[in-house]
Length: 368
Image (tube, rainbow, N blue to C red):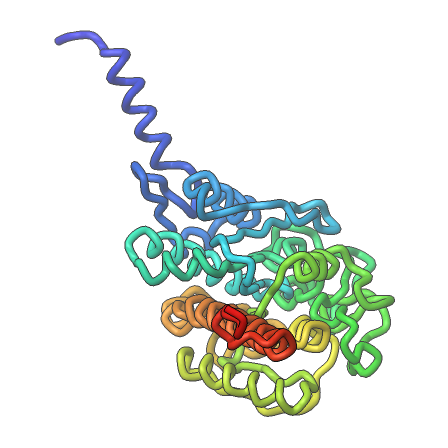
């Protein structure tokens, strides 16, 4: 029998380390493999999500950009990932509410799907040359940490609906300060109902609109990017909210896009005409662009102390896999429409100048 070959042992250790990079991702050769079940059940969900985002940025530097948007109240990094090279872009965010972390899982899967499909799909390659998409997978990492039982429920925060310590984290929608982030936007903020008036696991809108660092991160991203359309993922109910007091022309446009999303997902398009304080409400009013709240997961999981089980995920993924590409095509269409309008304006200006200087419209003058 021979002794241990040190070089072979080193190679074996190296190969093993390549496979065990993180609970949620395995890098094998040139491929990053995403495992939603491992991420869902991860004991280090926040760090695994951020590590995976950085992996995509390192793997696809010419396509993917990963940046730190800021830190949460509890000090968790909030990252965003951008795919594509175009100035016109799409914005998808998730987990405004802590207990709705299944939306983060979905968004991470969408990222993985797009960067891998890009490698062989010429249509997608052309799309990403024209437009881009920005993902903010965890608006509220502190809330996720509390909802998953990693962080202690703050002692100054009341629990609405159930005072049991066993259930308090299950219904956690707020951030680490007890502010419901999807009630912290200024659109009709004064009209928000059921506000407890103090920090709580849900419903507290904060002292003022944009009082929270997390909502300011969303605001800053919107100000710095030319987003043509926005999706805010929530759970649950399999329903799409689209109305935000648009003008008549915008309402017609947004309803048509919402119907397209409904056709893809199979989700019901809500026709409620009252809304306040939400991210998509503010986005629509602030920018005059379409914005949608998509509630994933079966309606049977609608409830203050219900979190989506992993058994729901296969259907959620099937329902929402193609939403990013649908939105990218809308953004590309908007860019083309802008180009056509600019071309028409330029043509009209040229014709006006030609009438004034006697040109025949083909660059020739009568004197010639």
